[in-house]
Length: 391
Ligand code: SAH
Image 1 (cartoon, rainbow, N blue to C red):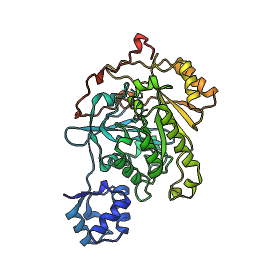
Image 2 (image 1 turned 90 degrees about the vertical axis):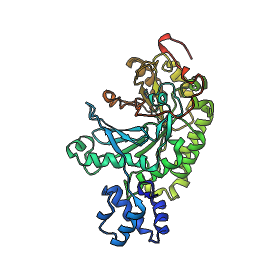
Image 3 (image 1 turned 135 degrees about the vertical axis):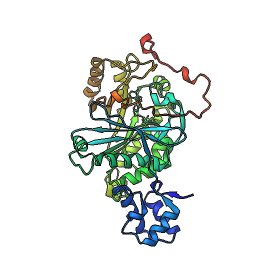
């Protein structure tokens, strides 16, 4: 079997080249060809000797994902459905703004976490994406967007870099696919590849506590945590992974994460060159009408997060068929925001983008063949806010 070089970060490439009797600097050359020049044909890599190009053709490939469909949103948002074989397809979303272009990347085909309000979770889980499939989404978006300069300009003043930020917030739980996600993020940070800084690369997790600690050690990047509820009773229902890693443990892990990026350790460590990640955690909080959006919930949230340097990002719920939830009215979102702001927390409300192409948070469904034996009764977790049931 040939090795897909898109699966390898710098250190894995050095190892690969050592295995075929080549010098370590070849890794740098190939990273630049593949990720910066977008070249997938070894015969075009003109600064490699003919002998090496032939050797590579015999042992390696550069296999990139291909797009099945690519609708454009009316607000400039782009969504690509990328085939990952076996009838599965994942989604990648590009969100252009005046000063930046953000790419939202998927980490799994489906998701196993079953958060009550998420379309991806409803579809079930098929498998982890490979490193090539994760970083391949960025490879793909950069290629397409740079070939459309007028579109790229809309999103990012610097035409050469249409994608200025990456968020691991697409389909899947990135920390449940730790090794492949971290290897892909190494490539995103690598100056010979995409050269992102640690603050322009954000990973969002539902709260897999041991993996948050590992991320801090192995690849600290900006961290977002899907909090969504101010107490365990409610979070157990909305984000079921909370039953395994309850809020007290989750908040302690967030604290350790921020402390590490503030500490001397970070300033003097090998990470310094890429800058420390942010000195706060972003708590994402979905606004579900009548479920988690009262001023009382907001006050509970203030008390809960007092000891963690953090910002809040309120996410108005994005509907999908049979979700059983409704979005909180704007006035309720504003009142919630005000309680947090008055307590001194920087709180933003996420503007819904890409809603018309089902590209907004929680609407990414791709095409997933569920491979799990579903637990009896799993799909009965429904919180019907319309019935006004308090949780
Ligand atoms: N598994 C990761 C990434 C998920 S998607 C995580 O849980 O953080 C990114 C964000 O969108 C998460 O905060 C997720 O909870 C939220 N989300 C999921 N479904 C949503 C919906 N229908 N409307 C709005 N936000 C949603």
